[in-house]
Length: 102
Image (tube, rainbow, N blue to C red):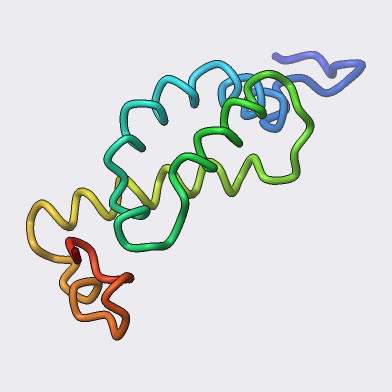
């Protein structure tokens, strides 16, 4: 049987922060050199990578979840672009917002 603990352990926020600061820069550097989100005009990939590296150095940020979800969105978009299921982006009203637009 487990004994009650004097203080909480295993808090997900601490684990999330530590993991993000250690792992995110390496993931982002390779992926965002050819960002689908940047091609669509959604983000500036250089600014995003700078924000990730600042966060990894310990700069306090309220945007950790946004950094994470931006990476997740990039992965999602790439996975759907590869199989042709993200055609809505190719039909955007703005030429700049269309993935693959010149």
